[in-house]
Length: 222
Image 1 (cartoon, rainbow, N blue to C red):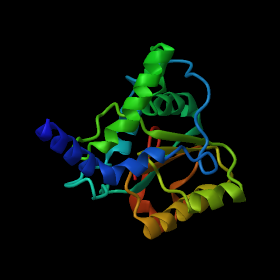
Image 2: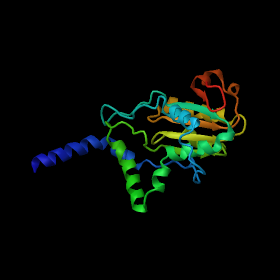
Image 3: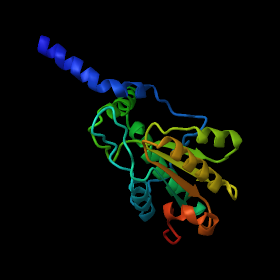
Image 4: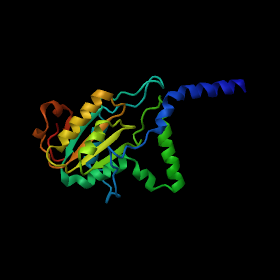
């Protein structure tokens, strides 16, 4: 009995540094979740494979040597451009990356169990992120001053995909500059990927940002 108690105490002590993270919630002032169910399955298309490679490049495993450490993704923030004609494919990709399709095939009780598992898994600091582990998602169609201010102070609670849907000229650069400044201040512990959905030219981005820019689908890769 004493041995069991000591083992339990040791396990709780190991998990204690990560327990406060269970309070982390989706930040709806900075982000806005994807809505609607995809019209079709594009999981086997070349664009889907390109998007998958892009989001995972430099994402890291999410593991640390101890529960007191924070993960450091090799590339905390990158961004890509996809032509507006591929909106349906981008929506389908983001929907599945966020794990919504996992809930579609489950009962209400099964969905609750799935969500609980997603919340608890990061407590085990030594387990690498699974390929099907859900990311947080954002589908932003209107970037106003309050949204930019929220992004300036935002800290991702898990890997996050942010889609800027047909933004006005100059908006992608403002969002990316805001997130870059945020990363420099806070050192994101999770990878963040910004997907610009629209007909945006490479030369709209400053030379300093082009190293982290990927032009997908019908465009030349950056």
